[in-house]
Length: 153
Image 1 (tube, rainbow, N blue to C red):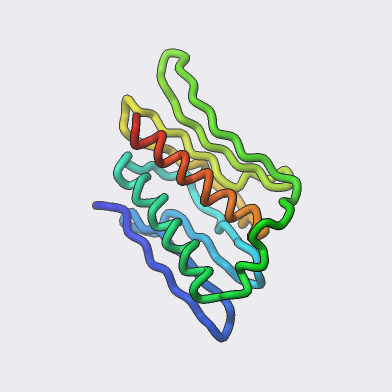
Image 2: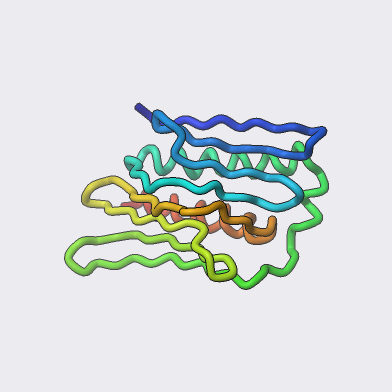
């Protein structure tokens, strides 16, 4: 079954939620109080086509934030908190494309794509992780670049 997603929003409560399913829920990203929360998740795997869908659904969610909550644009071009974005390609026996994001010492997202298997492994998040909107915007940009590299491999 292909990856699917649901985006729900509450204009009055100023929240928006992106939930991914494959076929059960595998990940969730929540906007509330001008910050983003990545829900706790178990590790999961996605086929290459589903990983590319994951990134597309993320773009849609990001675009909807600007459409549904105009105040979000005030966070564009603001400073980041202490965070790290890391994208690496290794080829020691097996080629891997690895995306890692760490916010204030806590792992937000780790994706390990193996071109030979045409599949990606997402690392578990033991507890919800909250990041700023500024950091989320960079996450979206990095995911777009990651999707391009995955598509080429």
